Length: 247
Ligand code: 8X3
Image 1 (spheres, rainbow, N blue to C red):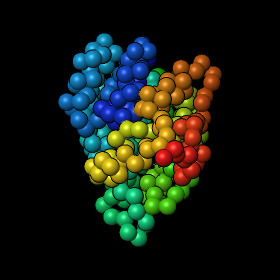
Image 2: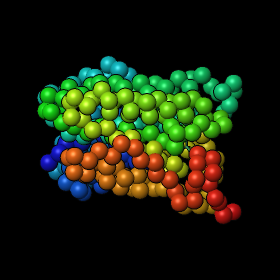
Image 3: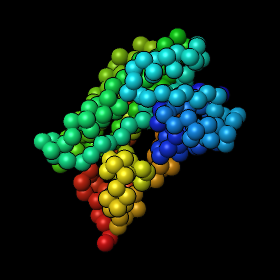
Image 4: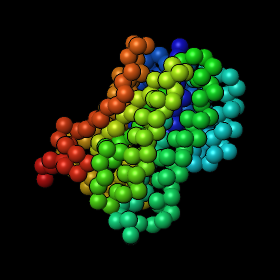
């Protein structure tokens, strides 16, 4: 049974991926901040979730000590899923703490987790890292400058890791979803439900399960096949800002 370590596991794309991968026969190490939600998930799939790790991805020491508690457990697949957006405003108007949070979580957090997990992958001679990016990592849009910058960084990290980890036989996949109906927008708009709902009005967005399916597709390719880069959009979305809505 292959072991998958996934961040941001307690909700959204992470939770849907845990559910799908558990049902598909993987063993999971599920990571997040919300222990109650992680424990509830483990109770649903006790045979497929061997470990729960509670840490704040933006806190370097927490990330390293938590992952080091796994000892020499082999991690076959790392899914760097945790990430979010804080605010939607022009660069001059944006709150500096929001901008820092996005860099700390989406970029530095991904670096911390990857650096902490690699010693559980490299000695075993193979591995696979899946980085969840965004359409915002492909195109910059109005009001999204620093969120987009954080996801452009994820794209660069994905490309660079693929080069640097080649001698270690580690595949690296980037998955860039467009609009996905999760609590992403609720977090971005700080709990403003009507503003969050408006993001997904008048069309069918992707579900968290749609993205989980894409992740499963990428990780269950034969050993000699590396999915480098996938952008996944709702059928009516053509770019970060072009969505055909029926209103
Ligand atoms: C989330 C998608 O378009 O809001 O990463 O940036 S978008």
